[in-house]
Image (cartoon, rainbow, N blue to C red):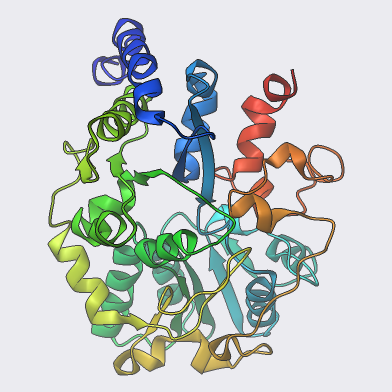
Length: 378
């Protein structure tokens, strides 16, 4: 527990909170609104609630919840495509567990499994590759999902399949990139963010410099941070200190994990396998150019989109359907709190999730339900 306790020390946390409270009025200056700081990652949202950090912050600071995780921004139309592939008689469709329950317009992958499709939960893409080796007569598809955190592992798995000459393995690629998503958020006219907490696990892969445009082009301070309580508090103190001192920089609180240049081997694998996709639809954010990636033509034999074809032509920028009574889009964009959605904790709950934000353990709706709902309403 030594290395966990160091990042949860109450005395250090108290000092950081006191320092944030001292600096926050100076940082806020003459703004009428509180400083609006977006935590991009749902893991940070959960830390804020689980350890009571959100309730300790002064009124000069308002946390705005960001896209959360790749499952949260997965459009329903893309889930439909997953189900369509899984319904092919020859297919074994493999996926991480949190994607199983995300609703499509027809059904989720879990419902497809209940209807007889061979959908299997795996813990890594290499597990899917092992299934392909054991089942040469079947087509094995892995649902490649995630920001840059998971892209190296899927890229390396594809390269392993290529080296082995496996013909029955492919990726259904839904990877998206963090900087492009952040740029789309910054151009949203409904948002007036003042700064960012950037995800530490993504930054472990891409490094610090891909965020330079945030400070250079938009003049928004940004701090890369980890997921322990003291990580978050120190990052908030670093941000507030920047405001108070009139600075606007990319800072790295998570330097024990995040190298400035990122993971060189991981970035090399990503560049080898993936290229930028012209159109990618994000739930709540619409089509974002150059935010998603697709498999390069050199590895087209491992691209499930090309191998099977899709009922919805995602590559042309098809837009999925979201029920009007669900406010997932507004919550994702940070313009609405989860408890303001009329379905929250009523028809939409962890036992019966209607939106991805309630399905994913990193979703902000799941975080509010688990930690913050009652406290917020009180």
